[in-house]
Image 1 (spheres, one colour):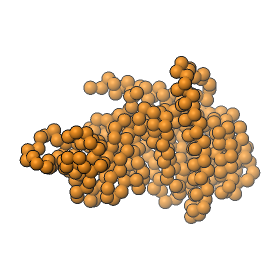
Image 2: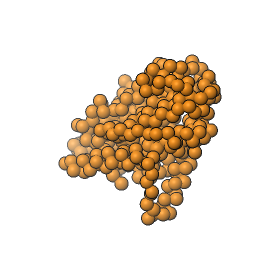
Image 3: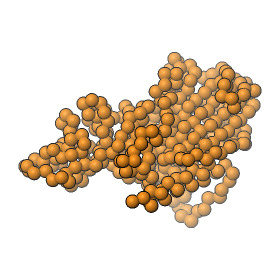
Image 4: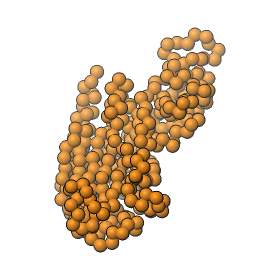
Amino acid sequence: MSFLKNCWYVAAWDFEVPASGFFARTVAGTPLLFWRDRAGTIIAFVDRCCHRGAPLSMGRREGDAIRCGYHGLKFDRDGVCVDIPGQERIPETARIQTIPTIERDRWIWVWMGEPSLADPDAIPDTHWLRHPEWRYKPDYMHYAVNYLMIADNLLDFSHLPFLHGDTLGGSDDFARAPVKYAPLDNGVRVTRYVRGVEPPPYLAKVSSLSSRVDRWNIYDFVLPSVLLMDSGSAPEGTDLETGERKGSFAFRGCQALTPETENSTHYFFAHCHNFSIDDPAVTESIHQSILKAFHEDKAMIEAQHRSLTLAGDFQPMAIQADAAVYRFRKVLQQKLAQEAMSP
């Protein structure tokens, strides 16, 4: 399977890469080594010594340089070999591939394609992850499936009442509400308003909303596979479309799927809330509900993967709720085709 290369992938949360030592993670089929120099700047190498391919993550730090733990070659922060024990001459080819890396809004982003095309402005906006008026708990899950199977799940929220009835879903009215889809240059926007329903159980636990509410759920799903969601609930009769949403309880979801291999995925997520931000118990309650729901997703999707593995000739039957799935897949295939045509 081909992965999109000329794009920014989330590789880690900022706290995963220590001030000293190493952090290793595979992204889009490439093993990466992350470390911080003495100034705290994150550096990413391909985790493979140019001598015999040993993982550099099994080596050691020497100031702002790394020494391979196998035969002792030493590389500076630019990946250039500066020492080969027992050899004075250092070949020009003695270097490690570096990966463009940016630490922004608590996430560490890597560019796996042509370095000259790595535009920082192309990184999706997730400023809620550092905004003082929002609270959340950062988290991560590892899936044993292809990342697009998880993307399909996130592109169709009609499953919420059925798979997450006691947390995110609530009544079946959510799945029956009309949905609008809008194409984006790099993905798709999905908009859903649900009126006059009971508040979702996870919100009812931590808010004053106890009677009927109006819910909104608006999100962009953009390349390579990042979900940016504006959602929440307000007292019934609120004019949700204007954005004022008086008396509402709002959330901002930031989720990123990063392919590890063809059949494994890194899943980074945060569900930010803008109410009761000084009450850690509220943040913890919301997070535990989200975590329960996401484990339900994981169990279902991995079971789906096992089922499909046994049915190689299975052809999915499309329904109306799949519209965003097919729109996103189309954009992805177009970008993959463009990369394949590029020199």
